[in-house]
Image (cartoon, rainbow, N blue to C red; front, side):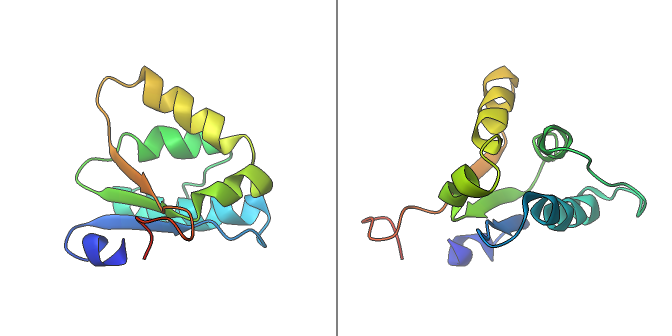
Length: 106
């Protein structure tokens, strides 16, 4: 996945199961804020706000490595992401890492 990403503008998010969801949101929000060119005072108060801006961003490949850990760390995230994905006419490019041991994994 990283090889694919290094050839284009991208946002790479690692879902660390040892981090509280608030810290993940802060970390991801900071990266998104910089990529989107938002002012330094902008902070995302919820995953809804984060994904709203993320799915509005154009020109970036977006990857969530170890996406499956969201089920443990922030179980609401897959539902939020699915709702945004289903209700947006334009789709952003999103990918997640394949499960370990998968033929697609590296």
